[in-house]
Each structure stands twice: as structure tokens, then as C-alpha cells.
Image (cartoon, rainbow, N blue to C red; front, side, top):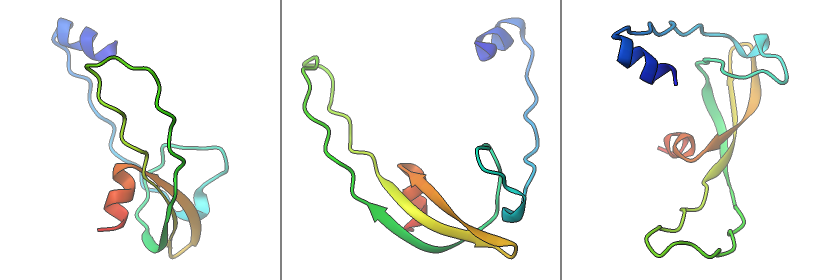
Length: 93
């Protein structure tokens, strides 16, 4: 792990500054972009219940995933964004 190595050697890795892009600059199949957009519409998606599996008595069941399909955009265009878990919570605030 890079973090463990950096901590052991005493070096701190500098974080990169975010590079903001516009919706019109996005290409299919890419990720890791930083955008400033406005949420136009958000719709929660029902998720299927996971079947109960044999688990250790000490483990808690995993909470169901929260997913929302969101139409977001800026002055250059709009896209469909799939918000998962905490991202979806922020959308509906």
C-alpha cells in the first residue's frame, strides 16, 4: 500500500488539485471527473432485496444499497448520473 509505505518512510504524498470539466467535455467510458452541476431531476431506484446468506453470528447484515438516477447539468449540457449510497443522500437534501 502506498499509504503504509509513505507513513513508514515519513514522506507525505501531495494531493492533486481538482481539475473541473464541463459536461460537453465528457467522453463515454471515462471516470474520475470533477464537475459542478445542478440537479435537474432525481428519481430513487428500487433495489432488489439480497437473499439472506449464512453468515457469522457476529456480523451484521449489509444495509440495502440506495441508488438514484439523476439528470444533472451545467450551461453546456446535461447527463444522467447514477448516485449511489451517500451520493444519493446528498442529492435529496
